[in-house]
Amino acid sequence: MPAEVASTPIDGLSDRLPQPQRVLITAAASGIGRSIAEAFVRNGAEVHLCDVDTAALDECRSNLPEARSSHVDLADSVALDDWLAVATAELGGVDVLVNNAGVKGPTAFVEDISIEEWRSCLSIGLDAQFICCRQVVPVMKRQRSGRIINISSTAGLFGVGLRTPYAATKWAVIGLTKSLAVELGPYGVTCNCICPGSVRGKRIDHVIEADAALRDVDVETVRTEYLQGQSIHRFVEPSEVAALCIFLASPAAAMISGQALAIDGNSETFHI
Image (cartoon, rainbow, N blue to C red; front, side, top):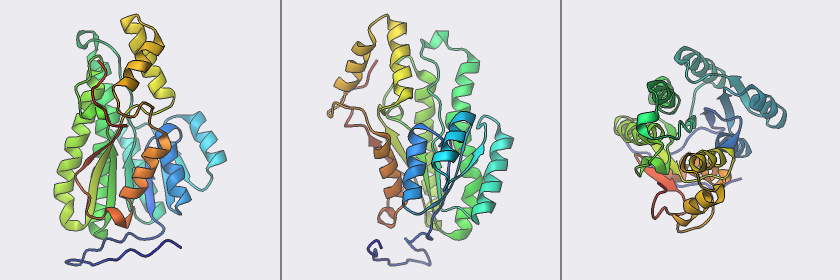
C-alpha cells in the first residue's frame, strides 16, 4: 500500500481524492494519451477514454481491457458532450480530466494556410478542451475536489514558425488553464497544463518530415536541429508525460495549480 500523505483540510476542503480515481482522458487510444491511460490503470484508477481512431480503439480494447473506451470525434461538440455525460454517469463522477486531444495542424507559411485548416486545428486542440472543462467543472465543484490536466506544448511557450495554428492553440490552452485555476481554487479543484517538447513517436516524425519537405532539406538535418535546441539531447518518452499526469493527480500536488509545466529537456531555443 502507498504511504499515507499528511492531510490538513482547510475550510472544508481536502487534498485527498477518492480512491479509485475516476479519470476521463481524450484521444487516448494511442500515443501520449495511451501512455497516460495505461499509467492511471496501473495506479488503480477507473478510466474512460475516447478517440476518433477506430483501429486504435480496437487495439486498445484488446490490450487495455481495464479501461472503458468510446469512439468520439472531438470536432463534434454534440458527440463530445454526450460522451462526457455518459462517461461521468458510468463512473459515478469524475476526479481527473486529462484533455489530451490535439492535432499537429498544417506545416506552412501563414499566407498558405486556409481558414478551414486554422479552424480545424483550434477545434480539436482548444474548443474540445473548453467543452470538456465546461461539463466536468460543475461535477468537481459539487465534489469540492478534482484535477484538470490540459495538454499544451512547448509551442505554447515559444513562437513557432510554419505552425501558427498549432502554436496559437497551445498558447490559448495555457490561458484557459490559468483562468480556470482562478475560478476553481475556492472549490479545491486544481487546473494545470503540461507542455511536452518533442515526444518520441509517429506525430513528431510526421512533423519533422513535413518540415524537411517544405524547406527542401534532409529529415535528419531537421531532427538534429530539434535535438540541438534542448539541453538534454533526446526526445521525451510518452511515459514521462504520463508520469507527470500521475503526479499532478496525486495528493502531493494539492497546492500546484495554474501552472504550465514544461517537460522538454529544457528548450534553450526553439526550432524555426
